[in-house]
Image 1 (cartoon, one colour):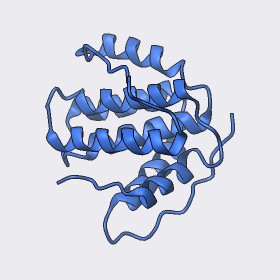
Image 2 (cartoon, one colour):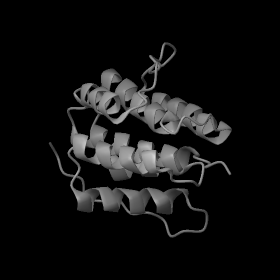
Image 3 (tube, one colour):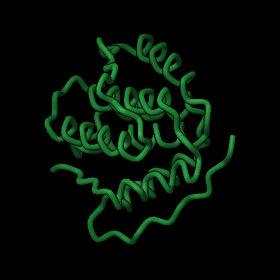
Amino acid sequence: MTIDIDDAKFQQILDVTVGIQQIGPTEVRTILQLAQLAAEVDLDDDPAELTLLRALTARLSTATGVALDRFPWLSPIPTDDEERAAQIAALVRGLPTTGARDLAFALAYLMIVSDLELAPVEDALLQQLQRALTIPPERASDLIDAIARIVTPGAPEARPVAATVC
């Protein structure tokens, strides 16, 4: 199953995460690198994850006006907890705003659940991201619930979750 993110759904995701905050080119690239890490952390080349990552990259590029023709992919993907923690810590420094951190967490969550399987390494990554992005547990839960409602067919429309401004 592929998660289908059309323009309206992507706008809802932006409304829930960044609201009216602007996201710069460095933040866009970092957000997408974290989404790539989430897609590949289980070392399974799932076509649905790749399709979703491409769709999110295109939508984020369009929404922010940031050209991503030279998107710097992470390579290699860190395979152990220590390497992953170092990579995440380095990436998170490129996300100074609350909205960018919330969006990175939300897109990572989408990548993780896109194959409908939650491997232990994916769950650990999501928890690691929450801590590194300094997202309080209740905010992380609200983001997950809102994103799930947005992408689940027939679910009630998600309402924006009050974002904290950093």
